[in-house]
Image 1 (cartoon, helix red, strand yellow):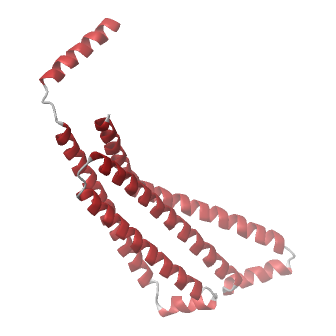
Image 2 (cartoon, rainbow, N blue to C red; image 1 turned 45 degrees about the horizontal axis):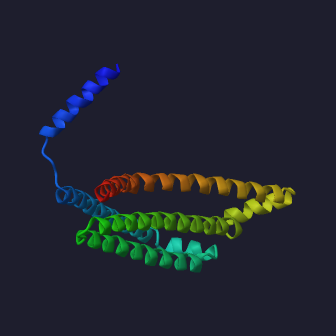
Image 3 (cartoon, rainbow, N blue to C red; image 1 turned 180 degrees about the horizontal axis):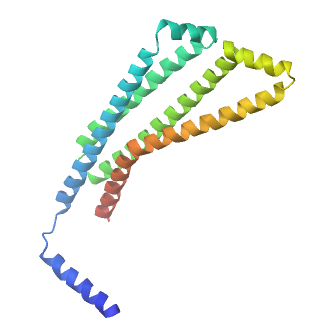
Length: 214
């Protein structure tokens, strides 16, 4: 079996000798083009995502919905969160665009490697920000519904009258944590699918560049 493997290796090496050899510059150019394309797609996807969620927010910003938020005493907080959310996401979009421009004019493998690491860092921060802002928004919404919402008030009053207020709040907190955790996992999986594939390809490019530098 060992002899057969050695023969196969020798045969493959002989075949390799007949293949065209790529220069350092040619390999670098190929990796640079692929990396630039990936970063461009990350920028485009972030733009599409921003427009999509902004559209959803506008649709649900009708006077009736705004009145409900005011009735639950969370209108001002939600407006502040919305402002922070849009401001930070626009900042990330600018960062993605800046990374794309930077990678487009990179002229060395070391600079390209650094830019790839910067892109990965920016995407990771972007995903974490979205998860955090979603969690905070959901917690405030749950609070508003149960403390000030008409249905929430009825449920609390009923639990208080039956002497189960402590158990009620325990169950509410437990269910809220589980519900939030499930939604966070789903959002994380969505981002992993959306950006994970692109980041994986960038990592492969980074590893190829490291080999070139050796």
